[in-house]
Amino acid sequence: MKKLFLIFFFFGITSTGFCQLKSSTFEEVDSLQQIQKRKIIVFIHTDWCQFCQRMKSTTFNNKEIIEKLNSNFYFIDFNAEEKGDITFNNQVFKYKPSGNNVGVNELALQLGTINNQIVYPVLCVLNENNEIIAQYNNYLSPKDFNTFLRKVEE
Image (cartoon, rainbow, N blue to C red; front, side, top):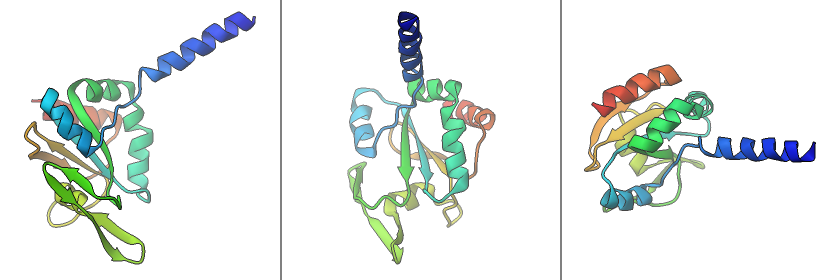
């Protein structure tokens, strides 16, 4: 009985490990682009955004989406309120405070601003040369996100 339990336990751990979304940092993507060119999907979010948290728990836990993102793109999970400096595309982006313990990273503003405002969550797609080719600011269900990915892949 113990052996049977251990077998199921082992397969349970290994099978869930294969279906995890690989998230990179901006610095890592700069290096990865030197090895293999891919489009970049940047998920810009905050800790307080309910729709952002919902996308994390539904859309980015969908097996089909995880497989597509891991195979065809570099994925960056980016908290817009990141306080540390971020180096990307030979530039350094800093945190811009806007009040008492409130602010946004300059890179989030650059990638996530649509019609002169930033509304979370934001999906920003960069081409192989780190140029913005698509932006979308709203919650996407797994089905809608798959449609979004198909359009981006074209």
